[in-house]
Amino acid sequence: MKVLVVGAGQMGGGIAHVAALSGDEVTLLDREQRFVDGAIATMRKNLDRGVEKGRVTPQDRDAALGRITPAAAWREFDVDVAIEAATENEELKRDIFRKLDASTPERTILASNTSSISITQLAAVTKRPERVIGMHYMNPVPVMKLVEIIRGIATAPQTYETIRALAVQHGKTPVEARNYPGFISNRILCPMLNEAVFALQEGVGTVESIDTVMKLGMNHPMGPLELADFIGLDTLLAIMEVLVEGYGDPKYRPCPLLREYVDAGWHGRKTGLGFYDWRGGERRARTDLTASGVPAFSGDGTAAPSGASAQAPAGVANGAR
Ligand SMILES: NC(=O)c1ccc[n+]([C@@H]2O[C@H](COP(=O)([O-])OP(=O)(O)OC[C@H]3O[C@@H](n4cnc5c(N)ncnc54)[C@H](O)[C@@H]3O)[C@@H](O)[C@H]2O)c1
Image 1 (cartoon, rainbow, N blue to C red):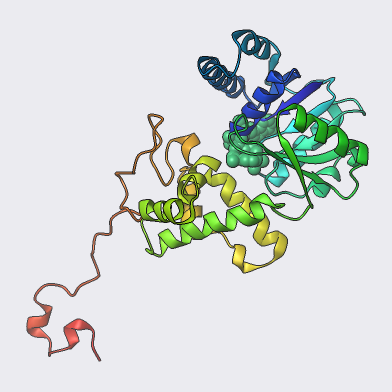
Image 2: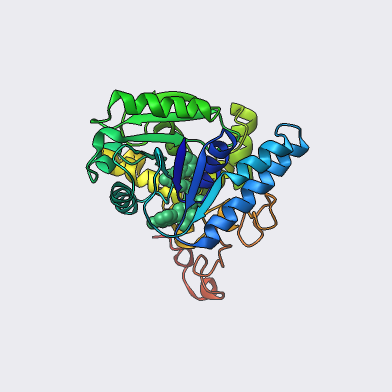
């Protein structure tokens, strides 16, 4: 198949990797050439590792890399399937779907890798809602076996069958989910990750202890704060916003500490800082914050000024009434 992947971040790069390795001709498009170059460099590194471990032959690696065409500007794309994997933002994705509708032939299926946004809403900005569908890969794409498939309300059965077969060709197990905010995966996962940030904010535990409890106590392979760093804190926040708006239930409200990290540009592993320090490629505890994930408090304002108790009547210096 001829496949266009829009967005060359963690997910788009991974989708291009599995598609090209399975024989698809892939065009990888991002806003700027440097993002596409970065994704192809990561793909080359991961494929080299696959060769070292004997999982990929050198010939297959070279053929896969040869099937990738980089792109940094919109033009006509003669492809069978377009998979959108850009930043989790509804307005941005609507704009991309309008552009996809105008830049691809009528036969092209337009799929979104969105984590939470309504497929019906994305389909509604196109003239082909019957050929719009959700195709939700997991991170890291070359490793994770699942693809959640989500039909919009107008998605045609043939579109579903084609995308299901493509997921299988990419080595994945497809599972269908209904078009509700967060689908199955993030409806269940993201509130747990958000709750871990609340636990941190409230001082129930430290970054390390929260992750250790969930790893050793619940047998999770990765702690929730580490996983949040892997997903991207901007993406987690965006998903929580879709959940709280979509269900109108305050149980999904994003934790303020999560929002503050995102405001600071601490988006997790991909930007180098999150609940952990990923600069240098390894997971390390942050040294600029307390173990509670916040800066050390000065203590100013928490005690009476020195000497106050000597002048004031007993009890007043302590604020007692
Ligand atoms: N991170 C995860 O664990 C995960 C898992 C499943 C699905 N997703 C979804 O995949 C999508 C991408 O997530 P990610 O983790 O790869 O994010 P990311 O931040 O790593 O990458 C997003 C990419 O989109 C590009 N982009 C933004 N606007 C664009 C535009 N107008 N045209 C083309 N490219 C554009 C950015 O330059 C960036 O390279 C999101 O919808 C996210 O919810 C993420």
